[in-house]
Length: 337
Image (cartoon, rainbow, N blue to C red):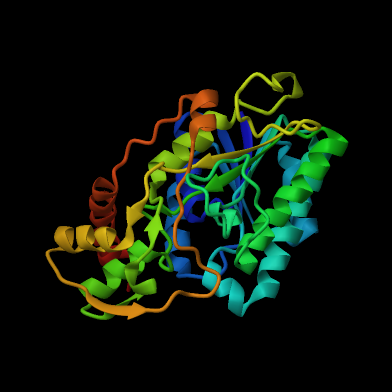
């Protein structure tokens, strides 16, 4: 199958592209290769993908409609998986305009082109951050999401609304993917596990927000990728309406929202303790107040995803940390200099 995938040199995009290629699919990657974090890491991911015969690539920004349009119209994909975005809750406070351009304008461009090439299924990355100030746990796709706490979260919620409108008017089958705290090998250097590991090894202070009194639904990258992969051939269809309890399927459009998480909340200090144990080192802890735009707890309900695909996350956070550290040693030796 021909699959167009944005953010192919990013964390999730790299892992998903590799799985698709290993399964024999043709993948056209699209990535800006920007310097939000170390470009060497992105280039190393790209070099691995570029060894596959069925992988092709365009470098460009999703905000650039001309480059994006030429790439999609030439490749003529059956499936589009849109993972490219400006990530990071804290950075969105400093540079909000970047998020509006990439996450909203870029996603609009993707949806417009999906309409033009008449894709069978468009899958778009959203985020668990859209649940914002919600207090009811675990988070379900049918819960109200009206209280986003960061610019990043607001842009992700906006893309859900735009996608639904397009799906309603032009009947494009769209699935929105709400990811919960993804971690693992080849992860982003700005994410907690990467930063904690680097700080502990280098005997530097690690910043721990809200004094560590936070819970996260840490979801290992392999489980995230497994969830997306299982959904590719599960395009929403209005004929499914009313057949599944608590389905997020729109009553008017082939549009569905799905959580992809581990379904367990982990206390942040327990996570750090497990990392210290694996490293055999103690962290120099710098306890900080709660950051603006952040949330104290995330916890996914993936019942709907399981009903649709049989999804069953397998990786305990302690095993996930161990797997990350095996890769991190490779990173230190080959990519960090």
